Image (cartoon, rainbow, N blue to C red; front, side):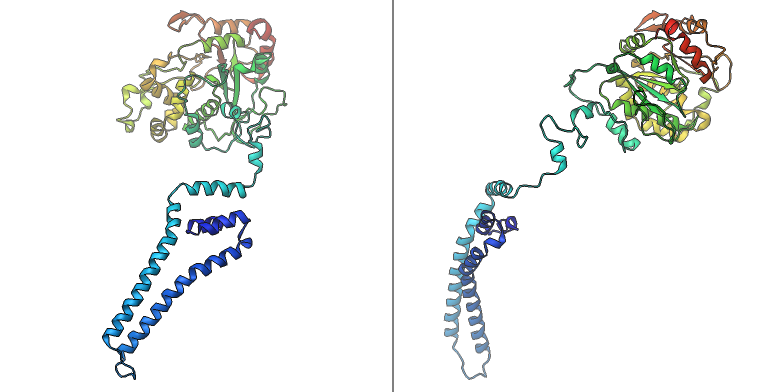
Length: 451
């Protein structure tokens, strides 16, 4: 109310209001000022009444008293003079208010107002103070939680998540000591049958060099203790249907959540049936040291490749652009940002690449080949055995797991290029391994697998 008085031009009242602590204590001041300025108002009212009275008498020619025109003119002139002088006095009195209204006085008033009546301190203000105790209870967003969220739970939609994950700082340097990490992203329908093997793989390794993300079907929770590396590593998930665009949604959802950690440099997509065929130091060095991403992308002229292309994707995607590849990729952060940022080409696949098209086998290979082929090695680092034929690869059970199998996967004789140089180390992971293969794999962990 005190501030309102000042803005209406009653600066003196507003100042008294603040100085005396409120309206209740300045009633006397208000009354005095009303007496000073109300006298001018009464003069105006009196002149108007007097002028109106004589007008009525002049018009009433049948009345007893009839005034001459000269008397009426003199009276009218006198009233106008009184009104004119009164207006000058009022103008001079109020001009100080107008001048102050357009000066920097409001800033001073506001500062005085804040100093007299400070805003109440909330719990959030106390939690987000600038001292060393800030944000310990998670009441606010500090820099650490911004650059590396410790809690993967959030209420963001996919659209909001991808927008947030697509942010790229302009400054090339980081305001913290950044150790590049490898994000291991597990896309699974249920529990992780190879969890014990992965815990063996990560055992005694520097947790500043890796992070874990798990996407399961809604309602599936990993039954682990708080000492497990998989504890609290499930991201907000949605239903996934094999052969549909929802698989692509889940892949992008994993990428989006992993991109929230600015230290994540490489991103590996894995299934519940994947295993590492080398130890962690070898995998880390191989991925962090690579100039390229590892995403399978090739032209398949058969009905299982180009035969799945829809002409309704023209002119944005032409037949010559169409590519196929394994969905199990490993990519660099730069390419991951490009993928979560895309809406145009994803929408085309969602509309026209129906279940018989298998979007997870064509969307990323086509998109990356069209716009980011120079960043890609055009191969995968996850071994899969397709020798059996059919829509699904071979599955390795307990009877298949031997030392020879691991060595065969490592040295399968294909050969590949790593940073433009020929190498025999082409695969870092392998699938599909059934739950029965876990025990023999653990038996080979220290002697063959190296972890």
